Length: 386
Image (cartoon, rainbow, N blue to C red; front, side, top):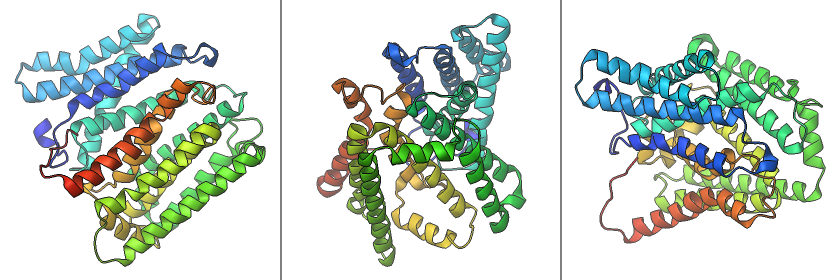
């Protein structure tokens, strides 16, 4: 099967990456704060699902490279991951076993679909992380959106979750219905998406009112928003300046965006953690919409977005999808997303703050320094592990 799937060039398979999300979920479960209420059945269900999906990836890669009898392949690929996942589910067998088998089967279907729809875009490990993340998000949203939130953070989390879930449904609709890929239906779909996000009864009051109340409650919050908007304007200016040049962006020019995201994340985490959490979801949604505009060639933005992609792409963008901005955002925000109630004690707990800053320190600082110094002084190219 692996021979028929086309992974990204100039990178190793990276199958071990499928272990990262299960390990992160287990770690967050073991170190969850009691007052957060995160050590619940939903968290354990997510861990069980992540373990099953990880095992499904490993058995798929193993049976693809090692010849075995068809019956053994069937047991390893279709039964073993689902059974192991069901053993981790804290429910009775009549519920746990079908749930484990269903989750691992859906995961493998989407995993193969991603490779066939986006050839030369992901390595086997990168695709595993992406599909795991999407399915775990959907599972978490389905389990948690039934209860009305009480605190500010829970309200914003519910709004962000429902918005991203609606956006995911829009992406599925665009994949299934070709008519929606034309400019007018596409923009009408975006308007419906905006109405669903702002008016869906996931909070009391409605999301639009809840958002306005939250944003206007604190003067410091407004100051942080203004500074972030200024950094967005600087980013747009840097992109516009680069597009006027006939050359592709150098490594050092691309790392300017790492510096800008550093200026957003560090003050945001220290002074307005809840606002930053919401902003990461908004940024992810904007990236997805912009990528849809580019991939579907929706006028009048497609030409400019394509030009920007061609100017800033690097070796990770070998396929049709612009991975670089997603990798930067997700790499910086993942510790915040995976930590249960990350903003509960961030101002009082220095260890928690360091944990939440681990993404920005690794990607925003470490990767930038390694890339800039390596491109200037490096002599030997190290093959990517991804």
